[in-house]
Structures are given as structure tokens and as C-alpha cells.
Length: 280
Image (tube, rainbow, N blue to C red; front, side):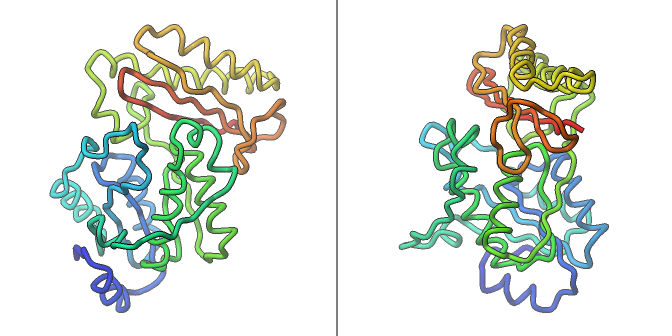
């Protein structure tokens, strides 16, 4: 496995590698969810490239970039063990050199849900992902379903800009109690960690109701909120949502399987967790 930190060296290294090429973008602090992406990419491609880059432009003014978990050597050991061919791990100055001032705006899709609570977040996500696609030129790129709105944003980015690659969604990896794997889980106290599975229980409540024939989206939102409110350690609920999987438009009725997603975002103290389930 080769570790590359500069753009010129990346281009030189990739030129000689066989296709198809699968890309797994990460911000490090790897867990089983990331490894599921790597394993899928390894099965489906001749070459696998992973990136480790804590992207500063997707952090809001109220979010502490410096506290984001980092363990580069552990991350590299995990990627090496799982057969990654190249790791691109640039510094911020490599990706955003002096004078950088070009951004990707994903429109209204990035202004709702996460966009409301993290203004500018998806501009940062779309810009760095577009740069990585341009630099690596993958045939496929792998993203987790846990970040459901991000997945919709990236699919729209690829479609609207004719980027010519396949976006592969990999199912959310969960702990046995249902909590979705996330680098931010490390911020939870022991008591918050015990309480956090309420997030998945709320989603499962909506999924169960829909499976039993409930089609009214407002009821599904209310039922998720009611489940979350049973947990005293939930400090606030940013949203409960029933949205179209592509446009992220809020729905009034949920009719077709696989066309709607239930999403929640909650705070346990200073830790914010998001999760979703597709209704199918």
C-alpha cells in the first residue's frame, strides 16, 4: 500500500494502476462502517483508493474541527489489512491552496435538514468530493447510507455535472444495540452511549408503522419524536423527517417502497447524531 500526500505524486501513482478503480473517501477515525465500504470496493474493483482528509470546509462555525478524532497510523494499518492499494492523505493546504475560491453549490437539496442546522456544510462536502473525483478519476465511489442526505447530494453532483462515475451506497453498519457506527460516537459519555440506541428505535417505530399500513408522513414524524422524547439524555431534537430519497422533499404521504427515507438528528450534550432508514 502506498501513502501519498501530494497531488502530483497521486497523479503519477494512479497512472499505472489497473481499472476499474474504486474510491472510498473518508475523514479517518475509521470504524466498521468505513471497512464495509472498503470491502465492497475491494470485491468490485481491480484497484482501491482510500482518502483520509478531515475537510475543514464542511465544519460550521459552532463545530470544533480541532476535536475531530484522528488516529492516522491506526487508520493506515486498517486500510493496509483490508487490501487498499493507495491512500491519499493530503493536508488542508494541498486541497485548499492560497487563493482557493471556487465552490460547488448543490442548491436547495443542500439547504434543508442538515443544511438548516449546518449552514454551508454541503457546499464544503460537494466541493471536496468534486475535487477528489477529479484527482482520483474513479469508476466507482463508495458512501455509507447512514449519511442519507449526503448521499443524495453526491448523486445529484455526479448527475448534474456529468462526472461519469457510479455512486455505490453501502448499508449502514450498526452495533448490536442498533446504534449506527460513526466517528462521532467517540464523543459520547458512557451514559449517553447507553441512551443513544433510542435514535434507531425511533426510526424502527416509523418503519414498523409504515409496514403495517400507515402512510401519513406527519404521523410518522410525530411517532419518531415521541420515541426520542422518552429518553431524558436527548438534549434536543433537530428534526424528524420523512423525505423523498432523491430530492429530500418532505412528504405528506408515503406510498411507494424505496422512495422515502425517515431521518432524525438529535443531540446528546454536545454530540450530535444523525441516522436514517429507507422505507421498503
